[in-house]
Image (tube, rainbow, N blue to C red; front, side, top):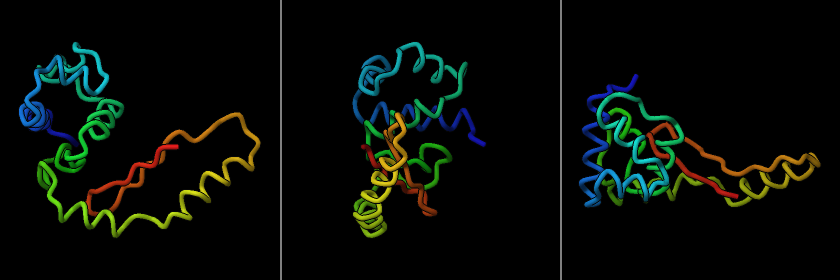
Length: 126
């Protein structure tokens, strides 16, 4: 479970690291200013959508660090090298999207996120 007070401190650290105000941070990630205000005040907890917006806009933010303080911020080059070694082969992504087209469905895969046991992740966008 996420400790809200600690999460707020880490979110403030991210905002300060990039030299943003809460308002400009909200604009960069595509969230409403009131959402940031409510999260920072402790009124609301962050949604999964909010977390994913932060992670996709600021790749230096580590998921495990943001959630529970484990890891580092900004992520170091060692972690990025490990991610590069753990990426699935290119055929994995092609096969996944190829199998989707066989269904003749009107649904399309928009994004796939793979979470690794070390807290890193890889985001595939179609």
